[in-house]
Image (tube, rainbow, N blue to C red; front, side, top):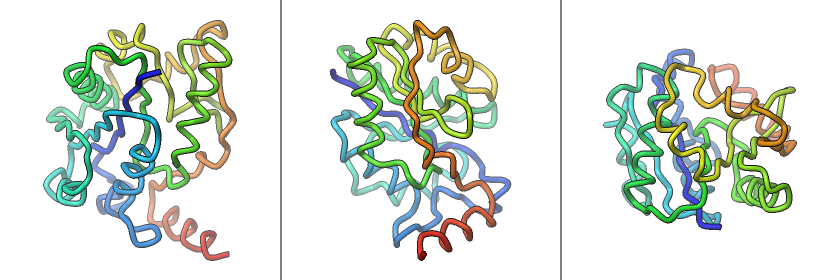
Length: 198
């Protein structure tokens, strides 16, 4: 399967009070960790969608072989970033079979996460594979090409939530409880750092 990855990193991090994309974990900014996880998988290309604070974040990615998609309408919500990402993917290659949509703030996101989604698609035959944690389906998620037009037409701040919780014959889920922990507030970041040391 030929697939690309879209990493959503356009948000303003208002609850964090600073760009969370630049928070360091093990000496690396979150956005670099996410990009390297994607680059360590079978995916190509890797698209990073930037919006708020793009001028601060972009230099971190300068040495990585990723495509940057600037989303000028990032304030509209997550859907606008998915649209920007899928448009960039389709422009890069018209022969992709699938796309993985991931978030930059899940510190446990890793190459094996992506491999598990791909394997679940192969074994289930479903056109959407979502990570499942905290009792619901969420990102990262894999979408076969038949969903690209729908992704490119999303609106609002719910992102692809309706697709991820669609009919069972279309969606399968992979239990990935470690992804339930995302970094939204200074408290989240402090707790992650504490737990990483234990």
